[in-house]
Length: 176
Image: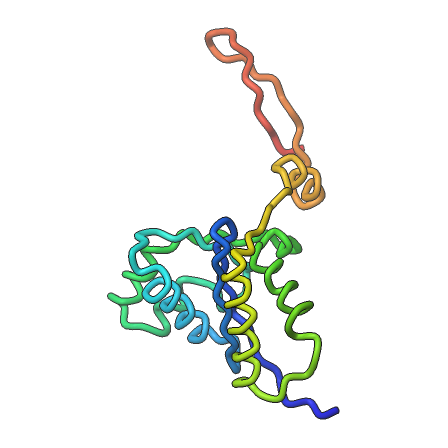
């Protein structure tokens, strides 16, 4: 088998609505990310004033990429519409788009694809099928499960009792 190269796959998903968008790109640069964000905001969600974007913490995934790609006034206009949240290090599985990438890998990418155009055709067909079936994501991970899972990532906390001036006990978490 001959290797024909590598590429990056950008995916956006609105899990409760069953909406997703997948795009293949030759690279994963700041400009590529910025162009994807602009498409998300102006093509897919032009009427939405504010989007909460949860993503992994790659060096290309930041508002600064918008400023490096677009004129300042345009970058600011786009950045103001985003509320960016990064998944914790070693916590990319919290990013629901990663679940979608896993589904793409199993359902669509289990073989060699000859070129970027053929890949984009496969991804578009997959995206259309998932949208048509209104395939939603049922997130079942609770806040308590997340705290238990990530306990090792955070400073150990010691629960202290502090009494306020009114004599009412206040719980406060202090680093150990």
